[in-house]
Length: 95
Image (cartoon, rainbow, N blue to C red; front, side, top):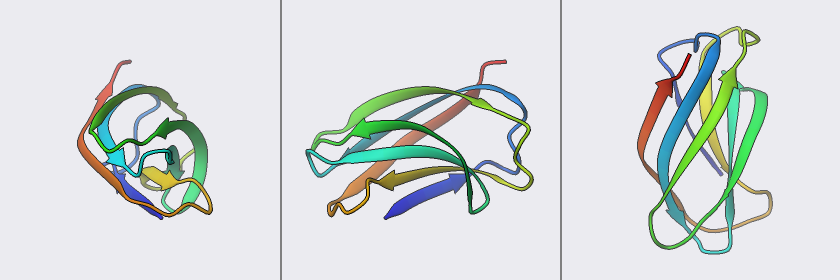
């Protein structure tokens, strides 16, 4: 299971800060990755889920390797079952 949202096209090369809230099945993890449309560009982080909303902040580098639309994706780890909610997403370019 995965959830994604795209930037309004291709992210410019640079450093970004991404802040978001998650909740879900306690004991499960969600992975965050960057994609180029359907293709995985990089796996950036893994975050634990809990029943209460938790804020996470991630710093990542967008490289000029994407060809199409930059996609920010969240994926439950393989072979897991449970819930995953995402809210309050804020993406900010640092440089």
